[in-house]
Length: 415
Ligand SMILES: C[S@@+](CC[C@H](N)C(=O)[O-])C[C@H]1O[C@@H](n2cnc3c(N)ncnc32)[C@H](O)[C@@H]1O
Image 1 (cartoon, rainbow, N blue to C red):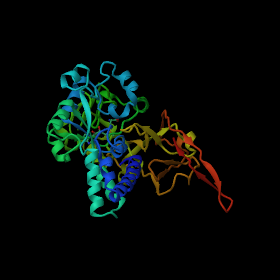
Image 2: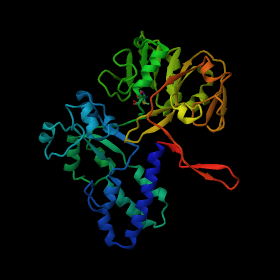
Image 3: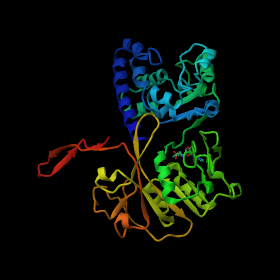
Image 4: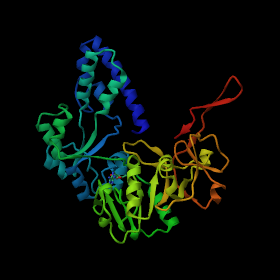
């Protein structure tokens, strides 16, 4: 789970526990806390309403509508404010919202999808009350567990209407609510590669897109209309729905020489094994520490993201990604050229912290992994820098003098 979301969820769990404990000792407060469901509900439902949730899903019917109208579902989370959305989809400014009373009126105004908590906030609060009544000393992690059961789902207005008609408005279990909708699909490891990184990567490698397959293409941003773009959850019409992990050699188009893409990090080993089973060369965007842990002998070349190093003061590879739910985050990653042939070894030193080596002879690739090279990064023929634009800047903290005369940086971090 995204660390920011985890921290926010923990904070909310603490707030919920505290509030519910107050109501436990003063039953008249319970009604106020549970009042209402949505944004016009009671104080607690309003507190929970805008929280970021890491579990995101979309119903099959909703995805079908997105493909039909050429709307990328993740834009619901990434494009902040209606302004950005309107700019990208001037003809469909209301695609993801609903405020009209009838379906016909909604469609007239271009409302097609809406969002739904598959466990309503009110139901979560009731579960927390039950927990508190059973055990007033219950740990805050139990409150957090209840919060983590909730997913944020994109569904069609028709599905939303069915939920309401079944008497499940702000009520019901997730099973009952899901049963009113078409099958829900999880967004698995949906981290988007900035387009400029992709363009620079192809300019540098001179790979022919027409001979490439991207098995986890999402909206097909790596290859565009060229080559072959597949995904288990395609988000553009030209991307073919396929589970890469079950793909066989006979299914591989004969034109494909190379497999490329930003693979799901949670399936990194499975994707690399499958890629190298199908072709000789793969270029995957990966998390540095995992690739060096499991495939050190298959790495022929490294493409590190450069552009933040000036700010970072060390040579870490960093790239900004858009993360669902408006939280910008950074991912420790690089692109690796992997081959079936055994490659000369890389001198990997694990568990160094980024501050330990700043001499230009070391490249950090993952959270705590440094790859020691024989020469300076810019002179090492096995490493190429991909300059990236970034909006993350390092903000210096306040320096506090320790008793021994050294300084401690507080509040330093990344914006
Ligand atoms: C990190 S995202 C990359 C998205 C996009 N290609 C990009 O670079 O911005 C990983 C993608 O892998 C897809 N995926 C996850 N498991 C998959 C599988 N078994 N087969 C094919 N695609 C899968 C997800 O649906 C998601 O779109």
